[in-house]
Amino acid sequence: MTIFKQEIKSEKLAIAIWSLSIGLLVAACVLMYPDMESQMAGVNEMFSSMGNFTAAFGMDQLNFGTLIGFYAVEGGNMLGIGGAFFAAIIGITALMKEEKERTAEFLLTHPVSRIRVITEKLCSTFVIIIILNVIVFLCSVVSILMIKEEIFWEELLLFHTAYLLMQFEIAGICFGISAFVKKAGMGIGIGIAGLMYLLNIVANISEDAKALKYITPFGFTEGSDIINNKEINIDYLIPGMAIMVICIIIGYIKYSRKDISA
Image 1: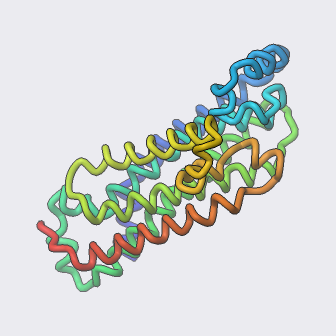
Image 2: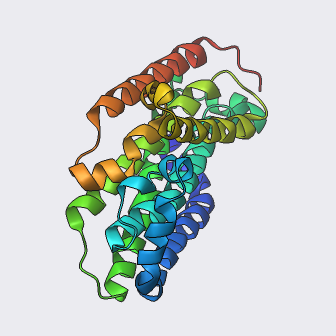
Image 3: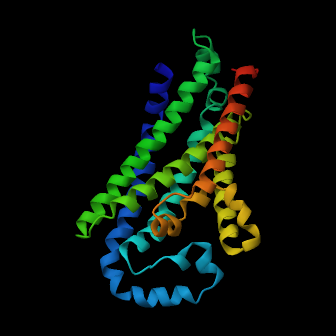
């Protein structure tokens, strides 16, 4: 498990920065809620008259005047965008970093198979994402306790689980692509995460584009679905996990056959 441990160790600064940045932003949103609660009736009314803009972010099906509705929108945006970018960066750099940093010759001359290298890097990628989400979840719980509100455990756990799975999917897609690239991978990863987010907005706005929900991992992270139905939408989750697995398998095949330059 040397490669696994080294991968996590090499990303510890990134984990700390991203986890605390996202976690503290989510916590800040929660801590703002008591001061904004009295104004929420007017905010709800304003959003209800904004048409497609409201639908784009799922605010047409949530009560923005409750903590759970407020958290789903504000916390969801912070965790969704920040978590997706982080997962994309971690995934896209997993396999390409050895060539980019000129350490491939050192790594691959050790008595380990390429399959083991890929597997340990993949496992470390998922563990890194889990660490980030645990820290963000703890920040959320602490901030809710600080404002003396009752914690909505079921919805909160489902909400964060959905975002964890979303990040897994984006990381898995980028992990597969990582086997094909040597440079500029970070830009590709961020571009993929941004595109997925945009596709979900388009799907929310237009009924004709609802099929995009089966492609974008943001489709099963809609706060309105999770809070109102108390479940993650399996219809969107299963295709997403299938896409992730396919991309990972492609990454395995490509990297195991790849002529890697040191």
